[in-house]
Image (cartoon, rainbow, N blue to C red):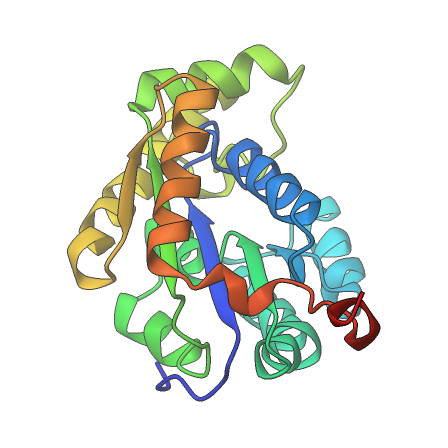
Length: 230
């Protein structure tokens, strides 16, 4: 990945489905917004340029592991060029709900070569902090299955032929993804948090780590000149 060449800061959350990462990032985002910090939020697979193609491919079940991976890479490249890099260069705090590590974990779990995946995303800036919310497989899967009436085809990993039962296929697919995430803990400097802890305790840990690793004062709004003489 390229070396740091921008004044902003990038905070990323990663983890399997049901690990609690999105909830915690939302709470961190609200805390920072209330504090008046300059920030931008971005999430995985949200580029309007690619979204319609991905949706059609899913509906018609045309996506192979490679085409799925390339669509997500195109989505990320578009957001990186139009949102992430300009705002990092503009001295913003960027919060990302899933980042390139999602591709490294999910696409590798689908059989894509890890080295090929790393090369595909080599343009991505390195995060200042990557939070990895780790929850036991059974806990994470139970959270998802209890909150969704039906799993989607690709979400459940049905394209891999792991099981005819969607719930079991989802569990097996998530186990593969969890294994891939665990491989990256040391090599990619993940900050590992226990996804089974109470929400408020996790959030406090997250805020303390952010405050210790990033100079938040740099992203605070500057007082107007007239107020200095008031």
